[in-house]
Image (cartoon, rainbow, N blue to C red; front, side):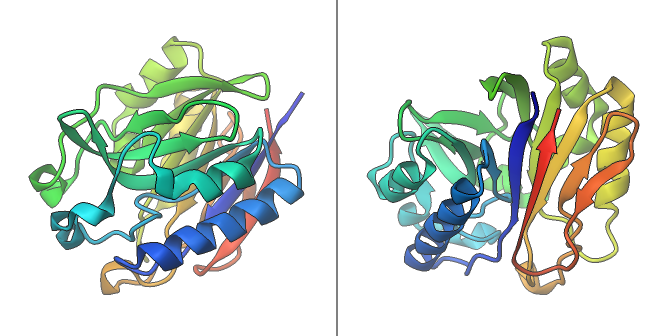
Length: 233
């Protein structure tokens, strides 16, 4: 049985938590209404990709954070993966928080930090794998996908689907990267890219889903806000 995935190519306002949380909830409601088992958002989707705002403690979330309660309620029994700066005990991470109404939050940290990210966060310790709609799903964040060993670890641990939250800008080859990871280990791969103009650069768009043979199952048509729906697996 396939897993129904909603890939959300969102366009957050950097640092505007209230607006981003509200829009995230609205997009989750739309996705769940269409039967999504997994709703995947891009990297740092709750804050926007701006490392300078990491100095503001309000930009940091924790598993179980009360500010995410409306998104959990909207998720119901579906899983919603949002991107955030996350405090996990003493650790500061760039991560995905996996939210649902009927279970504790799960944390999927970024393993491979890129550039100045290491000034604000520390690396995680490999892909989180969890079961969603009968499938073992591994989670990655952006630069993790540049390291074949990250996807290999997921496949070795039994993952069937490799999903990632990313920031790829115009001229960067997101489809090529995801097709390579798919073919390397016989995985379905899924990527949600930040849309708009993060860091003043145009998004590459190209959020999508790729089959284990590297072929594209579905892809967004533009580089702004868009939700892509497709069965996976």
